Length: 140
Image 1 (spheres, rainbow, N blue to C red):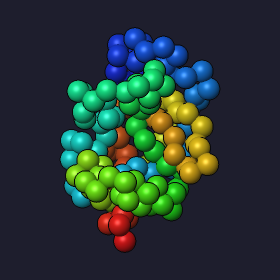
Image 2: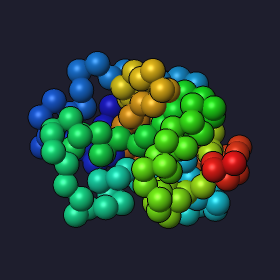
Image 3: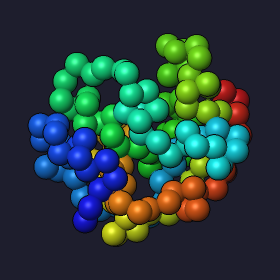
């Protein structure tokens, strides 16, 4: 499977990590109010190209899309981020979107205890067509 941003990912040691696998099922992600907003499905490395990362693991993660196993876990994570980063709304958005991912659409890390995982998209995949907003105002 060819991944989006393969050239950049290929220059990072152990990226993607060895323990990634295809994910099948529903996934949740922070988005802006307009699902078609160009920022919604860009990894942080593309959103903030001048941002630096300390480790190769962090560099690699920056090319994956942050996803969550459930809407509840996404909202809990957002509240923690909001307490630390007051302007997170401007960067990540304020809504939660849900979409179904299939076997050949990318690979992901295993969800952590907080439900977060990194999703590395297959080349040519358009997530804006697969995701719908299911929850407004993550601060609520």
